[in-house]
Length: 511
Image (tube, rainbow, N blue to C red):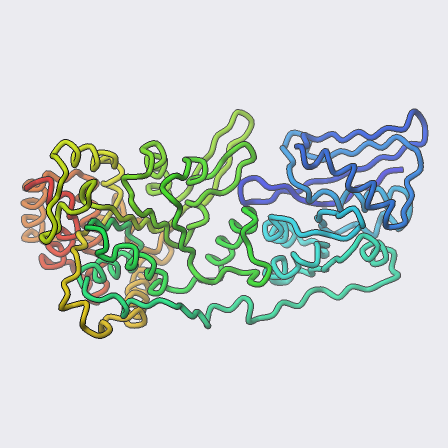
């Protein structure tokens, strides 16, 4: 007796089709064989499935059972094969017709009493099922809201093994899950924080507005208590809402990582990730023994905030260079190469020296020149070159603290940023990018064209500050974004001067 069912496995954040085949033979010594490059949790599924079948009232006769997970050369991991295995066994035993499984995709973890527990990675599975024009998918009830984010796909919420067998036998009907439109809406974004609460720091707010408008990376340097973290945490309040396709990309990553809330099946707010400086390189970019997305991927289409940047281990910081340049991460292993998305806006904060008071006029710095040099050298030149805006955040004066709320609020900043983003989206329509931070090569020359006088001004600044070719590119990109915020087509000397002003570390090293 033979049966098979469609399910999926994950490669990175994408799902691929897996045919789970079962053959039951009454001849020979009773045995159970599972083949198809199965990892630990998959091999353990036998015990869960057999116990769940027994406790659900189904009896397996003594027989020789062979299970194949095809394609056999692709690694299979996780507990999502429990339900497909149980259904294939019952179908092979003719508990319900084999044809009843055709056209459905299914996945789920079985508890020992036969109930279904939620699993990770259901959204990629649903997207794959829709791509293959499946009749529908059978998933644990808790995963149904997540799968139903995929439009025009029938999602059947399953509570138990008994229920799904009754459904496939035609004895019980299960209505496809109907998602609540409010759960996937981004219109009611309510933030508890606002830039109007930040007193002073108008220059930093302007830099943040430019960074958010063009998705530029930003480094803030200043003494303790100057408000660097406070500024960074309010950046999500000025970012444009996620478009549906962007939201799907982010949600897919969180689904695979097991960080998706059952109450909010679609992530509609741009992520803000702030890992501690003790994080490992695998925790930051992903990987590990059983590869999972790291903080870089969890910040995709959002913000990655690294507070106390020099405190991060140097090898951890250096792995950021690839995603900052390419917007993606490739993790290579002996048997497999995985790709994770990682297009994010890097926001970093640091003290100017170990004690923090090098640039503070009211405190005396106690650090020696060698200590300061060792501290700042923890951040390599190539990494700094990839950070477009580098600004100084000074200590706030008392006269600014006693004032009321700032006139620069998040709503006003967000409106200006959205206008600039629309200009960029229209300008780059049909190209593979939509914001200024991705301008390079011929596109940089085309969209950041300068007159002779602007070229002379920029050449003088590059020579005086000893800027690298990459820093020159960053200045042009920043100037392009400033012009977009100003609603101007041409880049002027004033905009170039402002862009150069946001290269704080370059200017300080030239003094």
